[in-house]
Image 1 (cartoon, rainbow, N blue to C red):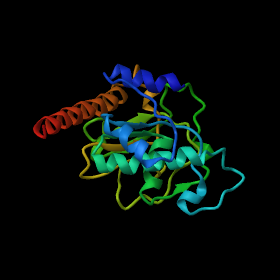
Image 2 (cartoon, rainbow, N blue to C red):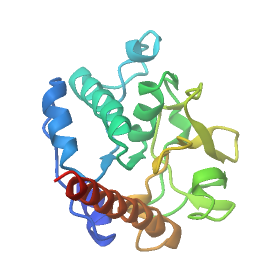
Image 3 (tube, rainbow, N blue to C red):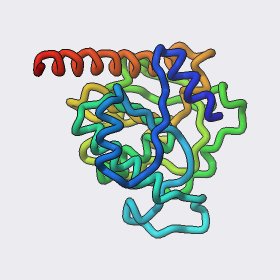
Image 4 (cartoon, one colour):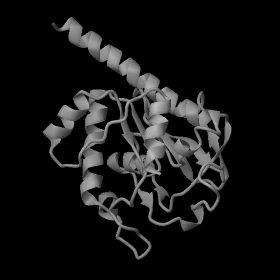
Length: 218
């Protein structure tokens, strides 16, 4: 499963590099300062105390270190203007980092079909409007999801049963989180492939602007 993330980035023309988990802001800042984008993958649940809820028996394993690291990294990425793409848990972290909340358990949304096949439809708008069709078929493996959307984010996809499936930050070059797993659909769905290409294109654009700024300051 983890290879699907790196394959998606590579197929779009990017070079994926893993960042070691830590809570050292200086390390995170220095690392992201030489990066051209930030990609947040899926994974374990987010600790409920980070969005003001109490843990229930339906919550899965958590890593506070990863949660805190990704929240720190997101705030630094926003400050730097880095393009950011989040998938599943990644989209949830984006929302929590900016003051939103989550549904703690939505087990009925776990897909039983093969991962590359769509299981439901979403209505698309906003930042995803030029990437996915207005009605798109996507896959789904999550048991937690965005509840109250951060006031700093806007919804850009809603499921056919009314849940938030994607969010973005207005006035940021590229800050998009999707609840589904496009990395598993890049070989069968042009929109999934386009999402990663758009992300990498924004990373390339960011890199060029950064190099121009550095050249102007020397």
